Image (tube, rainbow, N blue to C red; front, side, top):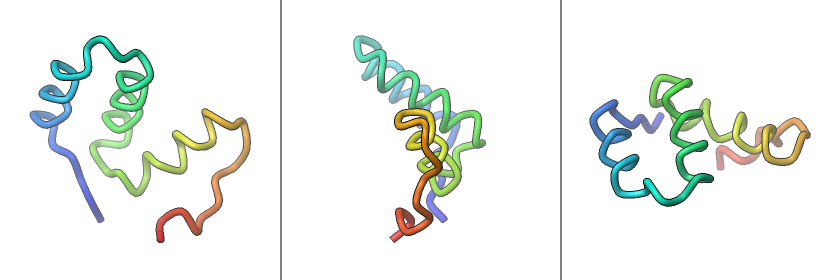
Length: 58
């Protein structure tokens, strides 16, 4: 499982401050405590209003 630390999220926020979509994604990653495997399906579901295909983990 790939994780992102709070420090990395903070750094990404600084680097991507002018990109609202990236900041929303970082909020979701932070909401999932840095676990990208948990955040990706949630991001897909929020973007498409459909449940994410579990095959995305591949």
